[in-house]
Length: 154
Image 1 (cartoon, rainbow, N blue to C red):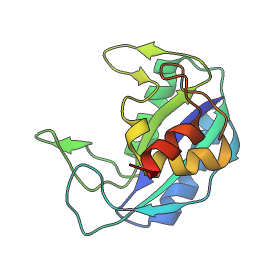
Image 2 (image 1 turned 90 degrees about the vertical axis):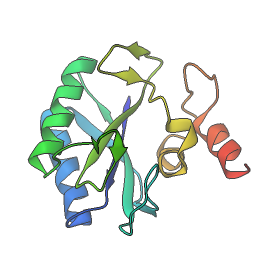
Image 3 (image 1 turned 45 degrees about the vertical axis):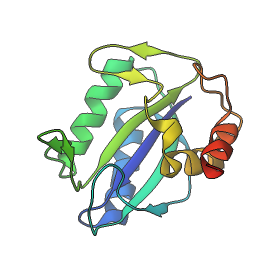
Image 4 (image 1 turned 180 degrees about the vertical axis):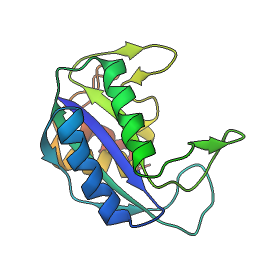
């Protein structure tokens, strides 16, 4: 199963998340699991706009780069213009991150799976632990619950 992290802190946040899940189901694969939505502070930059974060699990027959192409197209369709400005994060209508994909490891210039920073982000681990607590990170050999416990107690 492929797990995607969704985040939005601009525009109609709840509507964007619902539309994103619908488009993922149409274009990427069958959405099987959807976490609760959690609100979080921006990560890596300052903003007064809080994020809504959610994680979905889906089954797909697409290749990793096909998934990336589709998720980037969905981001653009729902109003995303750029991820950062001069390498600094900024508010965004939608961000879709490929988090984990079974035991798969992808290491290309365009895509890294597992996501390189997921183990540092409570807004990723908490919703992921809700729907897939025993899923293992293939590089760290830790479950999502174990990674969440480590970050929650630091």
